Length: 515
Image (cartoon, rainbow, N blue to C red; front, side, top):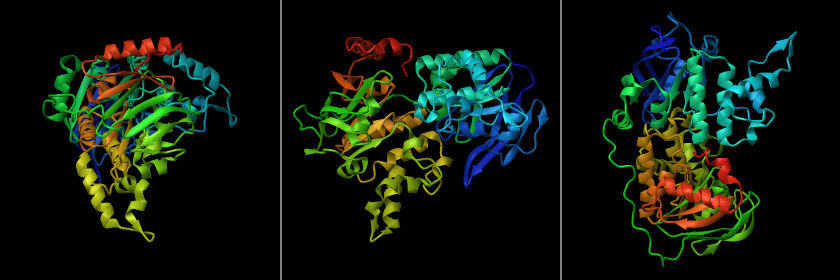
């Protein structure tokens, strides 16, 4: 139950990065025992506002009041002392430490200058609440992204915070894990804690939040009870207009007799891929549909040579690739936009320009010198094409929102006009407006004759964008399906049937844990 006095209040907050105003006179009041959601397009300022509340950024203008008392200097140390912590979208884990070591990093207990060995008991108490089931002794670098996200949640809980700022906490969680997170949030608020819930998943926002603040272009548009909002009303407030359609019109599918651009035959690899066979024609979008852990990403990595191939062939534009590498695949026109944009895609401290051209510098250099005019022309074209906001490629990537970072990552692999683009979770952590821009880009690639292999855990994306799709189970490409007129429920039923038919136990393991 919310009380009259906010546990934290931000008043007239303005924050600029260079000449760009990320926030412009924003007010926010968060009450104990409540969930206050922040929604808006990528670049609207919601993550920046959450980071100011948690002390990651200090405002240029405005004041911060905690439990009725104004604060002076504000940083993460002072915020944590006042009971305000942040679970960041950009995972801030130490990959070489264990799960338990990461959870208690910086809050270890000591006696006579020696660390106490009570991590196991403390971790068990946390896991009793979260029920994530992670092995505390596992090295974090060996976990998949979704499990690393769980470690971030446990870190926030371990600090016994009064306010937890959760920035896109469900972006890598399955549906079952999201429900568990929401149950945990309700437990936290029942204890009188507050949660600031930054998310672009509007269904989740409406399910878990008490209050919703809508932001656009660095300004607060409105704050209202969540019970008075609908998904349509939130989208309209976020965009300033109605979003009438979910997917753009697609170019016609290539004729079935069109020779394939990509032909994969009985591909197998050391990463678990086996008997993967399919084709992609020029201008065709082919989707891969699978349950969690089905091997979709592993197939993509094997195709470009990121993981070792032990059998089978990959033929691109009539040329058999043989044993290849990501660099050689790129030179031949086959590229992969990876799922993990921070770990595998971008150098956050470098500029957008540097990131876009990093994998293709040889295209812009002669006699060891980079042609900066050619670089600028290529980058400006891609910035316009992908509608990067702000359109300032000289800024470091870390200063952009998650959705615009994703656009920069996609742009990086469009340099040189590849023949076939593999998109692995291209809209993860992206809001509805930026999603549509990426959907338009995918349709545009197909219209230009580029082949697209689309991997997405949001099955609606594959059904709405693909000309054809394949069901994946345990690294095998199985049944082909026609996305037209197929419902998500039909897809899930087919996937469960496939998993049961292959005897993997995958269906039982993932029925309650679909993304």
